[in-house]
Image 1 (tube, rainbow over the protein chains, first blue to last red):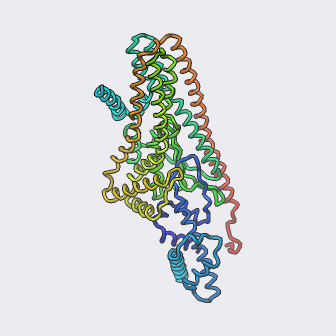
Image 2 (image 1 turned 180 degrees about the vertical axis):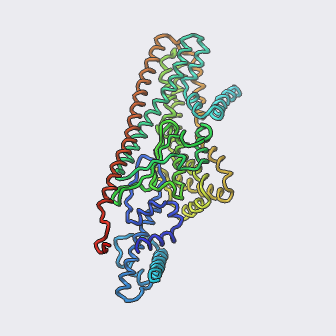
Image 3 (image 1 turned 180 degrees about the horizontal axis):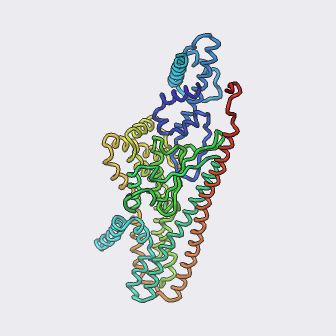
Length: 125
Length: 413
């Protein structure tokens, strides 16, 4: 579920960015690889600004999915967006959540939760 | 007097631009950039001796051998970079070769050949550009972000340039690939590879000519003036070199956006507007980055709404503008002063000719050595890729054979 939800959410939120990065880099990022090597002597276009953003988004979306599952289990109901957002802010120290503004964070979590629910509904059907 | 100076100046400037536009960039660069050639031409007119004709022939050869020498050094360096900067960094990958013809549209090939000046493309076979898509073996393999290219100085035609891309070539976004092909099309001048390559001929010419001059007040004054102008040429070259990165990137951008689909142009516009640091190059200053970004956005808007008619002119303009330097005022003044120096030169003697030919022969021998070194390096690259591919394919097969066919929890039917 993680891979699917993350992929759908990213494509929904960053269509132009992913179009330019191409599928290989997206696959790497989805698999958790973000430690790209930079060549020194060749000529290339530096896309770090977007690669870093997508890598951070992948980490955040993954955390949001994990927290959604845990909270759902603990609370016995579907957690609200604000509950997930609060937990993300409290518990995530290893990922670079601070790179996102409050609105961006809410949009990311909102879209992630929407996609999880969509996928759950599809599975139930 | 002023009018004569005006006409002489414009004669040289016109000659260089005429040569550039009608005979070709390469010839213009080779002939007009090398003051020694002009000096010996004038010497033939002055002396009308057999020795002076041989000296002129030798200076013709010097131009070719000197260019081959610089190209050899740059080509060897480029191949070393491919090996050390790229391949050895990413040994756990499979390298899939693609021809240019299967990688890009025919109109891109046409444009590349149009700018390089070698006729119309039928297929990509004339262009020696080695494109590899790089597929890491597993998640532990180190990898490049997207695409890296290594252009060679004579362009992609003869010595082989390399492009390594992470993405499959059928992936929808082509901007990076076309951008790098733009570099390979335009940045094949020696200036791109060897700092100072455009003032070396002036320096060498003066070093060669000065000892052959009959010393006197006027000739000393001329040599002193030439030295001063040479300093100006060196300063000018350094200044141009400093700005060359921005020009190169903007030219490559202009080339690339010409061939994008409207969908990709829109995506690129959106990303550029959203992220001010996108495509920021560490080698460029903040102002240069802003100028490049502004130009790219403007060109994209123009192309997005007017489609494809405008960009060709724009790209040619950029390509030509970058080669106007060889008709700069300082260079024309250098050639004029040098022409004056002919009046004070010693006659070309057999001993001078022998020294000249000996130096030339030594240089040529070294060029042959460079060619051999380049061929070895080139073979080394291709062999490395072949061996790595074989090794990694075996590893991949071995890994897939050792992977459990059923998970522990799954029932075996």
